[in-house]
Length: 151
Image (cartoon, rainbow, N blue to C red; front, side, top):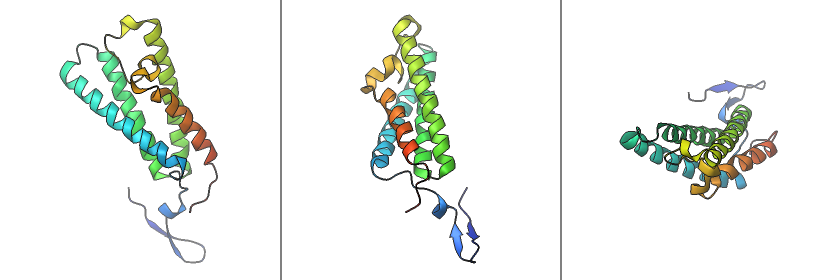
């Protein structure tokens, strides 16, 4: 939904976008870039695997698609900015970390459950452990951005 113009107490026109707090600045830009790379990797991996060999490992491929959705939502929230987007991204980062830890533990304890790997297998070992590092970094960054004014 596009942002609409509003009028403040002095009668000056403002936009909703101008009132949003910036989340993408400094290290936040690197965070958005890394999440963007993970979106591309997880989407392309899961789309290919689901469309060509879904019957081989449906759980693994579905979990990769879930990871892709989480990465996409967090990337969008970081770019959008604002307090609501910051809170939503923080919750999604926490859910992502829980997923990485659960799937990572599951793939270590019961590897036979996964005939093929997911993005989160073995805590993201196939992706240089970025899937376990990224949500922690994201949550730390988002906590520091609380109450930061718009530039």
